[in-house]
Image 1 (cartoon, rainbow, N blue to C red):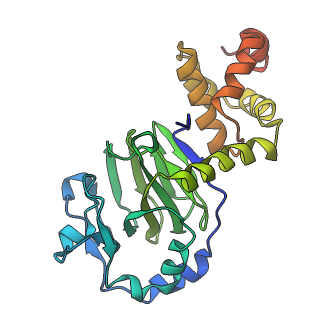
Image 2: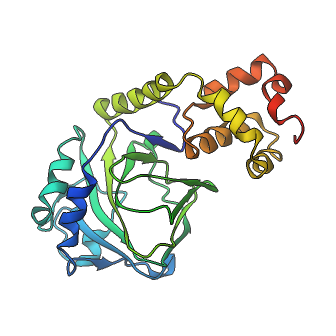
Length: 266
């Protein structure tokens, strides 16, 4: 099984403008999320694939972690661009939903314990409508996801979302069964990211040297695995892609030498 970070950008790209135009024509289909205690404001859903046989709105928008029989809903035909996007995935599709977080709304920190690649189910997010004022936090670290990109997020870990913007945030959210095709896609994502910039870790070290706030986050971390995973997550947020193996290798060369740009503050 792959050793994955808690966030991974996949080598897929979608036409966010076409998806957004399609969504703009639909206002009456949104269904309020059925657990109001988990959010403040407006969090609503359009189910494109739902538990087979589900007809009530609440059962349609619920991604039942114990169910493996999902089917297209009548809503899917209203969104042909979304339907085309789903054809990119050569793996079994479980729940597929459009999820909207209204302006000024918050999804409180929670964990979806059954959503983990290691457990055979991966949740992917494709941002369609978003902005810099949408703050998605995973394991205490923010994650910026641009419209049209595609991300694996390990949402069995603590996560929350705040929309401080003036318009709704909309993501296409897919729950997928892990198969050989999906695993190969994840491997390609990891390898491709490393090939894009082999100097990413060195560049991130220099970046952190000028960021006392990031140094302050790292300073208390005494466990090297915890340190490495936090460095990976911070790097990804800032646009520097490397993995925990890169960090571990650098630490083996010599911790103080590797941390030399930070020596004055660590």
